[in-house]
Length: 445
Image 1 (cartoon, helix red, strand yellow):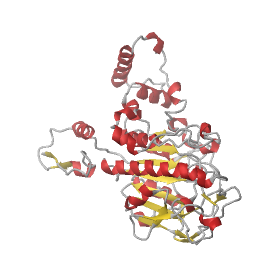
Image 2 (tube, one colour):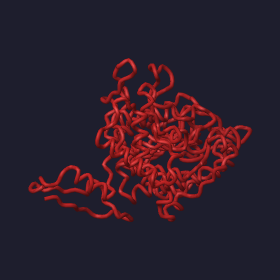
Image 3 (cartoon, helix red, strand yellow):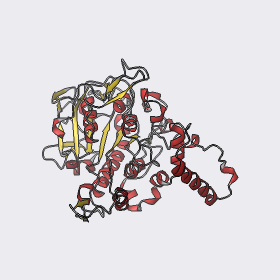
Image 4 (tube, rainbow, N blue to C red):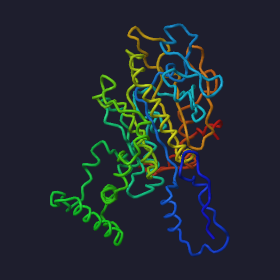
């Protein structure tokens, strides 16, 4: 007998995966695996782990967000005041009141070390330093997941990048490295959609969408019957899957969401920063899109948010950008909990380094590589804690320094991957461990 049981989560019509199926010892021979998977899909229950990475380009000011020093001199403490949070004795910036009110659902790391000092997404997306790379380069985490597990659903790429192309090229994700272009991130805002065309299928020949859809369905049926052509490479297969499935388009279509859900994330302002036209936009709707994509089957979705390289106007820019981040991030985490996804989706928010404790003559903070911060949520982690501490001026870690690679190991751990035992082969065929020496954070085990 197969019994479907469970209780509803608060504010949710869905069951968690662990509550979904109770299988008896007799009489389930008539139920196929396909039937079980079909029941899972119909109930909206996930069968995969995933990551949403929010990359704060340029290095966010830790002492103006999650590690304020109100007793420091004015040239260090800045213009923002600390406020109390859901956790007794813990304070964060007044610009993040929503995060403060639900800090029990977050982990703050105040003692993040190991930045290699590059103005680049490389370390945040690969877990490696830029120097001494193997031939082809280290792959980003999304490419690793694509290589290890492939897509959950053929119509949803495993690795998706929602970032706009940024003028400072190293901010853009580094790509698949030695794993090859088949495992590149899919970019629905870039050239990928335009590049995906099917040979011998000219859209201009069709005078309405119904005919086009009929043609796609015919291609899909042919693939189901005969498989892919022998000479089809990874790109061709991805293009065929994406063009013959509506699943990706539906996930990207925010009109499918209730207006109240969309409003929770805040309003997009493409011009919030004076240099937004260079790709550094604070688009909060992408947080909702990321949730929809991991729900649909993506293994990792990356968002670049704004640009925090504020050598001048640190506090002016902060008042615009940080509250929007606060609203969108808390909406995302609330959404994950409401939908029973908090154990399956890991959220990480960080940048490549911190900012100088001392404010410069232009009311800005410069690059600071000794220490920075990160915010984590979901992933089944024991949230509601702050890890590490810095000295009185937020210059360096004085308690529980955490390395970038430890965070990466934690993300892999949340995905069910042991990074110290799992390997991918480089271009020479040499197995490369995902992480050489660093293990997950014991505080989050």
